[in-house]
Image (tube, rainbow, N blue to C red):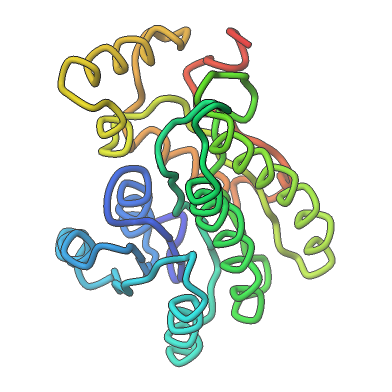
Length: 252
């Protein structure tokens, strides 16, 4: 018997990385899972891997029309949602205060903050009693790392929204929590560097920023998301769960 038998979940940003690993784990635990992503080829490949329990819907969370279409599909199916994993996010690369542009600032906040806020808002009408919302945060929101100003600020904003949403939605029986991954072996992390040498240096630096002296596998983060999504965390809301290898908790 799976922890999500008979449940329906939505995972945004599920084409690759943590989102795909989490969708895979949800399916293995018995859930039917809507998966979204901006790139149709990768999204369809993910759906093919996950099998008939996955429903792919191409969607950019920063596009209001895409969000309307996404939730119209959920409404039409009539099952509602037991789990929302608001995982989609990104940014326009790293920039110090000298180099940040209005365009990159707007793009990062449009995806990470505005997109997530309205994903959650539009999901409210289809959340089933006892539903769980999990939002992806970042260890960068706890640090002052040069170049991460806009990105880390967007993730810090989400942390505060989660606190407020937990209070606002508790009367409806809905729990809201943040998962905070440490450095994880995803295409996003490997794509930050401009070349192979820079990527290798970044991976080495990231590994040694953790107490465990390695980066995480996406499946390890998915296991933590499953905990927050399932009844195993029934008395947990408004919290941050750090799956960061001790990066922040031990090396603040």
